[in-house]
Image (cartoon, rainbow, N blue to C red; front, side):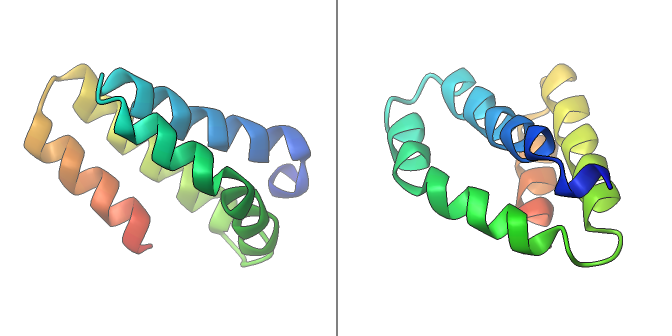
Length: 85
């Protein structure tokens, strides 16, 4: 399915990379770069969980919506919910 598609995994990593860069904090992209291979492996395993693909997409939509609204606190909460999931 979609979740096993290497394109999905790369786009997921790119989503997080774009957010890290958008913060304009030079440490975030560096930190993300240091764990990007682990992120890819986690995606490869994680997508085997039923509903993981759809769940990840929904989290990304929620994060992006709060960024568009420029609601820092809500964006932070949406990202935290995504990371905890």
